[in-house]
Image (cartoon, rainbow, N blue to C red; front, side, top):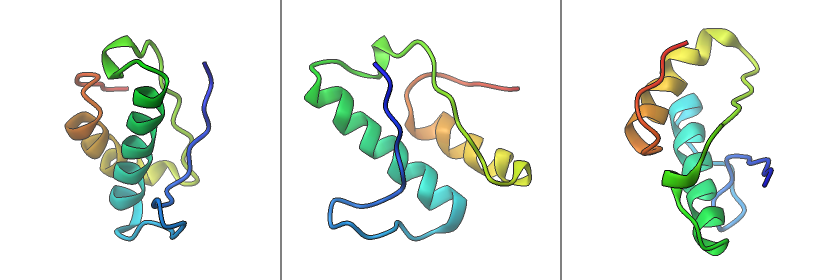
Length: 75
């Protein structure tokens, strides 16, 4: 299953908080997609993250590690 996610709230507003807020919203949205499909993060094999600026990687990765429940990643 492939899903592209953007950092919009259920109200259709862009999430606040910069890269951290956007990452958290995208992960929350993906969790909702997984739940609607009857699955969870435990069944996720791969996640691709596309950043506009690689200088944002550390901030994004800190949030990803904290909220995705996919475990720690370092690249």
